[in-house]
Length: 348
Image 1: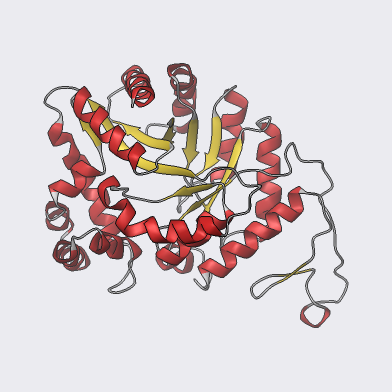
Image 2 (image 1 turned 90 degrees about the vertical axis):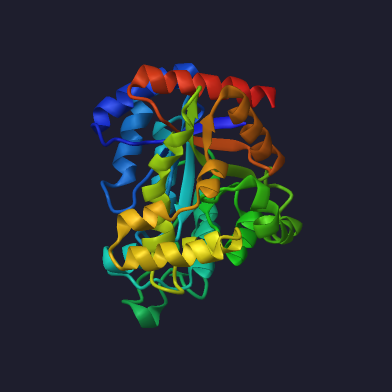
C-alpha cells in the first residue's frame, strides 16, 4: 500500500510545505491538497511541486462545478508539467451546501457531469480538437447559444502525459459504479473495511465489468487518522467532531450523503440521532453520539499490533493507498508515524 497524507496547513502553509520534505524522506508517497471553501488548491500545488522532488501531488478534491471542463484539463496539464509528471487530478461533486451556498451554482446531475468532464479532460490531454456534444456540456458552444464564432481548438502545449490519472471521490452506489468504470482512482470517505464489501462490492463489480482494458487496476484510497503506541485508544475521540459534522451537518434531512453512508454501515438509529442533534445546533452532543465502534474501525489508532491488524483488514478490503492523518505534535513525530505505518503496510 502507498502512504498518502492530506495537507493540513492550519499552522501556516509555507511551514507545512517545508515539512513535506521531511515526510517525503520518511516514505510519504503522495500528498492530497484540499480546496473545500478555503484557499484555492491549484496555487498551493504549484508551490508544493517546486519544493518537492519525488512526492506525488493530488488535488483532494477540485469540485466539478467550479471550473469548466477544459479549464480543469488545462489546470491538470499545467500542474503535471511543473511537477514533472507527479500530478493526479482528484475531482468530486462536493455537496449542495458548498456548491450552491458558496459558489452560487446549481448542484445538478453530478454523475452525468463527472462522466463528461472525464471524457473532455482526456480529449484535451491527447491534444485533439475539443468537440463534445453532451447533455451537460457542449464544446464548441452551439451558434444559437452564443455569437456563433466558436470553433474547435486543441491545447497549445504538449502535456507531459496524455493520460493524467483521475481520482474521483464518491460514496453513492451509482457514483462508485461509474468511478470503477472510468477512473484511475477512487476515494471514499469513512472507509470501514468490514462493511466495504456489503456497501460497495456490487457497484464496484458492475463498474469494473465495463472498465476499459487500457486503464490500470483501480487505486482505492482510504482515509484514516493514525497514531501508534500504548494507551492511545482514546485519541479516536478527536475524530468525533469531523464525523458528526459530515453525518449530521453536511446536508438537510434526506439530502445528506454521509448520513446515508452511516445508515448503510448499519448505524441507522445513531445516524438519525447525530443528524437531529447537529441540526438543532447541539454539535457537542452530536459528536458524543458517534458510535465508538465506528470511530475505531475507520481509524489506525492503537498499539503496533492493532494497527497492523487494521492495515490487514484495509488491504483485504481492497485498499491500495492509505491517506493518513498522523496524530503528532510536530513534524518529526508525524514523520516517525509515516515511517512506522509504511513499514507495517509492507508487512501485511
